[in-house]
Image (cartoon, rainbow, N blue to C red):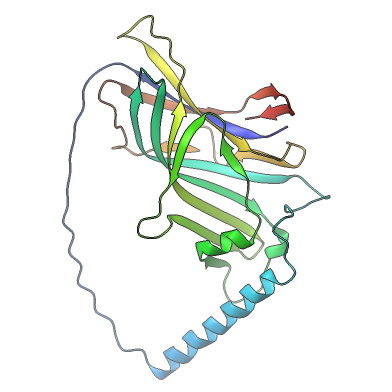
Length: 246
């Protein structure tokens, strides 16, 4: 049994829209030469960060999920859509570019220090447990790596992690074209855990149903549809491995 979420994007055929905007920002920055005391403080902070990181990973086993044998691991999720489209009638699929955010608590990574929040290099994600999220109706996806992997990893002192990545996803969108060209469609994006049953890992929306999925105002990339809105929810399905909550 897997657990996951589903988000629908609803469109009706309406009009052609094309818009291009450009800006050429200029920035001039000035900085002061650090003082001796400032350098000492910076060196002290580096030492503290290093000790915290070394302590976090000492004896840590990333093969084991947080709370194993004690509690269900809850993964909070929200999505920011930077662009939606194009939509293919013939292939019955759509493309979406998103910042996919996941948050969970791992008590093994709690720390004490002068800061409550610790920004981490995304390379550390391979050394800790992260959710095995996959897209049920995805055909292909791209994780952006220009000029560096577009990922963010942040740790709170209580062990709460925020993991954000930028993805471009092509997903299935079943369509009924009987009323073409005045038809309407709902294109779902379904995701959940690949291996864990919902007795071990569950997914919940981070915010309310109206704010867990946000579409950028200029995010529509549709030339023959009009993006009407989005909804979020969960559903249960049966598979050969058991019941899944997506």
